Length: 110
Image (cartoon, rainbow, N blue to C red; front, side):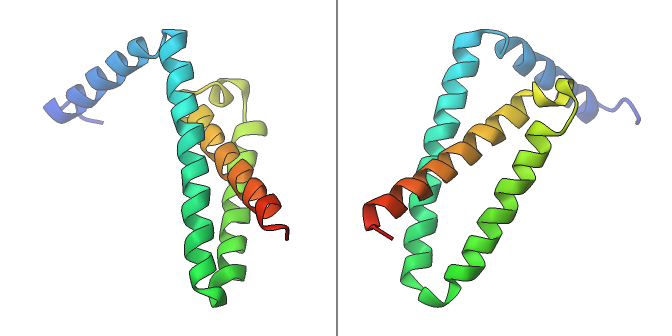
Protein backbone atom coordinates (compact mmCIF):
# COMPACT_ATOMS: atom_id res chain seq x y z
CA UNK A 1 0.00 0.00 0.00
CA UNK A 2 1.24 3.47 -0.75
CA UNK A 3 2.20 5.71 2.13
CA UNK A 4 -0.26 8.53 1.48
CA UNK A 5 -1.33 11.20 3.95
CA UNK A 6 -4.64 9.45 4.51
CA UNK A 7 -2.87 6.14 5.16
CA UNK A 8 -0.51 7.80 7.66
CA UNK A 9 -3.46 9.54 9.36
CA UNK A 10 -5.32 6.24 9.76
CA UNK A 11 -2.18 4.57 11.13
CA UNK A 12 -1.60 7.39 13.65
CA UNK A 13 -5.22 7.35 14.81
CA UNK A 14 -5.11 3.56 15.15
CA UNK A 15 -1.89 3.75 17.20
CA UNK A 16 -3.32 6.46 19.46
CA UNK A 17 -6.50 4.47 19.99
CA UNK A 18 -4.44 1.39 20.81
CA UNK A 19 -2.45 3.32 23.42
CA UNK A 20 -5.67 4.80 24.83
CA UNK A 21 -7.18 1.32 25.19
CA UNK A 22 -4.19 -0.02 27.13
CA UNK A 23 -5.80 1.40 30.26
CA UNK A 24 -7.93 -1.47 31.62
CA UNK A 25 -10.62 0.82 33.05
CA UNK A 26 -11.25 2.41 29.67
CA UNK A 27 -11.36 -0.98 28.00
CA UNK A 28 -13.79 -2.39 30.56
CA UNK A 29 -16.01 0.69 30.43
CA UNK A 30 -16.28 0.46 26.64
CA UNK A 31 -17.10 -3.25 26.91
CA UNK A 32 -19.86 -2.49 29.43
CA UNK A 33 -21.23 0.22 27.13
CA UNK A 34 -21.23 -2.32 24.30
CA UNK A 35 -23.06 -4.85 26.48
CA UNK A 36 -25.74 -2.29 27.39
CA UNK A 37 -26.03 -1.19 23.77
CA UNK A 38 -26.64 -4.82 22.83
CA UNK A 39 -29.39 -4.98 25.44
CA UNK A 40 -31.02 -1.86 23.97
CA UNK A 41 -30.65 -3.35 20.50
CA UNK A 42 -32.47 -6.47 21.68
CA UNK A 43 -35.35 -4.32 22.91
CA UNK A 44 -35.48 -2.56 19.54
CA UNK A 45 -35.33 -5.83 17.59
CA UNK A 46 -38.14 -7.38 19.61
CA UNK A 47 -40.39 -4.34 19.39
CA UNK A 48 -39.94 -3.96 15.62
CA UNK A 49 -40.43 -7.67 14.99
CA UNK A 50 -43.44 -7.65 17.33
CA UNK A 51 -45.15 -4.87 15.40
CA UNK A 52 -44.89 -6.67 12.10
CA UNK A 53 -45.86 -10.20 13.01
CA UNK A 54 -45.03 -11.57 9.56
CA UNK A 55 -41.26 -11.00 9.91
CA UNK A 56 -40.73 -12.80 13.24
CA UNK A 57 -39.16 -15.88 11.69
CA UNK A 58 -36.93 -13.84 9.38
CA UNK A 59 -35.64 -11.66 12.22
CA UNK A 60 -35.04 -14.71 14.41
CA UNK A 61 -33.06 -16.34 11.60
CA UNK A 62 -30.94 -13.22 11.04
CA UNK A 63 -30.21 -12.82 14.77
CA UNK A 64 -29.28 -16.51 15.05
CA UNK A 65 -26.91 -16.30 12.09
CA UNK A 66 -25.27 -13.15 13.47
CA UNK A 67 -24.86 -14.67 16.93
CA UNK A 68 -23.32 -17.83 15.53
CA UNK A 69 -21.03 -15.78 13.28
CA UNK A 70 -19.76 -13.76 16.23
CA UNK A 71 -19.33 -16.97 18.24
CA UNK A 72 -17.28 -18.47 15.43
CA UNK A 73 -15.15 -15.33 15.18
CA UNK A 74 -14.62 -14.97 18.92
CA UNK A 75 -14.10 -18.56 19.99
CA UNK A 76 -12.60 -20.47 17.05
CA UNK A 77 -10.03 -17.90 15.94
CA UNK A 78 -6.40 -17.73 17.08
CA UNK A 79 -5.68 -16.28 20.50
CA UNK A 80 -4.29 -13.01 19.13
CA UNK A 81 -7.46 -12.23 17.18
CA UNK A 82 -9.62 -13.32 20.12
CA UNK A 83 -7.97 -10.69 22.34
CA UNK A 84 -8.53 -7.94 19.80
CA UNK A 85 -10.58 -5.07 21.16
CA UNK A 86 -12.99 -5.11 18.24
CA UNK A 87 -13.70 -8.83 18.63
CA UNK A 88 -14.20 -8.42 22.39
CA UNK A 89 -16.52 -5.49 21.77
CA UNK A 90 -18.54 -7.42 19.19
CA UNK A 91 -18.76 -10.37 21.58
CA UNK A 92 -20.04 -8.09 24.38
CA UNK A 93 -22.63 -6.67 21.98
CA UNK A 94 -23.70 -10.22 21.11
CA UNK A 95 -23.98 -11.14 24.79
CA UNK A 96 -26.17 -8.08 25.41
CA UNK A 97 -28.48 -8.97 22.51
CA UNK A 98 -28.74 -12.60 23.64
CA UNK A 99 -29.40 -11.65 27.26
CA UNK A 100 -31.94 -9.01 26.26
CA UNK A 101 -33.91 -11.37 24.03
CA UNK A 102 -33.80 -14.10 26.68
CA UNK A 103 -35.02 -11.70 29.36
CA UNK A 104 -37.84 -10.43 27.14
CA UNK A 105 -38.93 -13.98 26.42
CA UNK A 106 -39.08 -14.69 30.14
CA UNK A 107 -41.02 -11.48 30.79
CA UNK A 108 -43.58 -12.30 28.13
CA UNK A 109 -43.91 -15.87 29.35
CA UNK A 110 -43.39 -17.45 25.97
